Length: 236
Image (cartoon, rainbow, N blue to C red; front, side):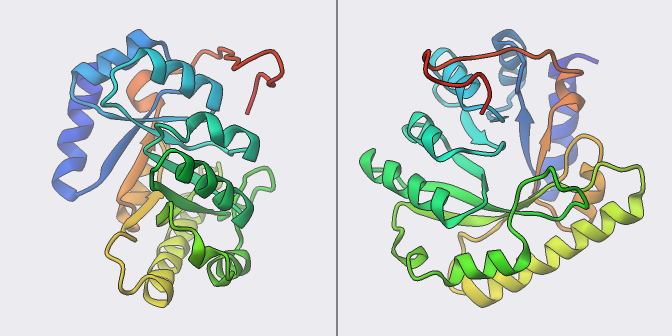
């Protein structure tokens, strides 16, 4: 099926149940992104800062860009002027850096705290104790230019649905507990981002209200490299 048909099918599936679709456009061409855009998609997710910046400069300005990959502190300044949400916050250090650059641009940047739920060491994220420590950090309450909207997690890359369900279930329980303990009076803490092309239906069944889909929309990806300047590394 075409990119446009894929978007229309997914939106018909997800909108009625209140699930937000992030089209993961990493390595995809501007032409492919525009096909999704013309079909009504407005939220796109990128892993690499360089790639997001290049695309944001040339694509429609009403696109909402989500940073979904691991973010280094020295790259925050490049996306702070325009990024709609940073889903991959995994330390108080990066949160403070986002706040600093958001303040410079007179913005409040929405963020999700990434929780490590997979049985894989190569994935980023806070463990439960680190999450609580971050939220209790005295500096956290002083960060007025970031708004923590919820949690994000990536399940283990496995065909074992039982494992994936358990990881999603645990993150939903953690989300509910964090909301009650730390954000009880804040309606803005409302986003649980979990689920990709291979497991998004399991994620939704376990409470996700934001899914990040790439290959389901665009097909397999082709790797490209983007550079901000000669002093930057090719990857984020």
